[in-house]
Amino acid sequence: MAWETESTYYSGQGVVLLGDRDPATGKGDGFYAVGNVSALSVAIATSVIEHKESQSGARGIDLRLTTEIKATMTMTLENYDPRNLALALRGNSATVASGTVTDEALVFSPGLISPMVRSGVSALTVSKGVTPLILFVAGTATEADGEWDYKVNLNAGSIQWAPVPKTAALVLGDDLLADYSYSAQKTVGALTAAASEKYVRFEGLNTADGNKSVVVEAFRFLTDPLQELSLISDDIQSFALEGSVLLDALQPGVSKYFRQTLLD
Image (cartoon, rainbow, N blue to C red; front, top):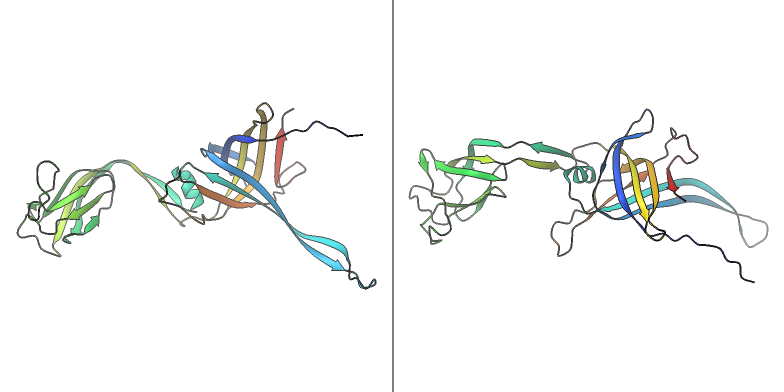
């Protein structure tokens, strides 16, 4: 006789939310959706002491004592949002308003490239004293030596100096000044912030069971710094946000780590 039961299968998709955890109440607030997450998992590990008896001659294990329970969470993010990067890099993100730069100091280095302080550059002028230098403009000048003084990558904010400049008085090591405007931009500085605890909420769908709702909440998620940030690849880039799910004594429910809610 075969014993049969109805099985509930699971194939998940959904949205991951991150919020700040209130250390006084253990609740999460101010959540934001992190964007596309291609993988999300929780792992549980234990450390045990095994005791061997000394009577039978077989030294059999007669006791396993759990000394540690550890939960971790890993999510693979594909959204290179500054907030996500700042959290993964344990850094800070900042928004820089558009503005202008006057008299930024540069040094003439024939054939080499000099970065500017800002990206998203426009209305750039470079001068030696009161003498303006000659910008190479495609279609209006040739790239031959002696026809221009510098080229510019406006988006990146960098200048390439001519190997042989058109301005005769321009020589290696000359001090130059740059004036320009720049667009609004965001910056992320890595390893500048202390670790912060987050409240994680996964609002998911079980696509193998009629898209029924699945909600998972991790109460204290402490991230580790990003192990790798891939910058060049033929694939869609992603990065793994990993960390520990810590015990939260403030939680009123049975579990102090995380809970999963399934709708019937």
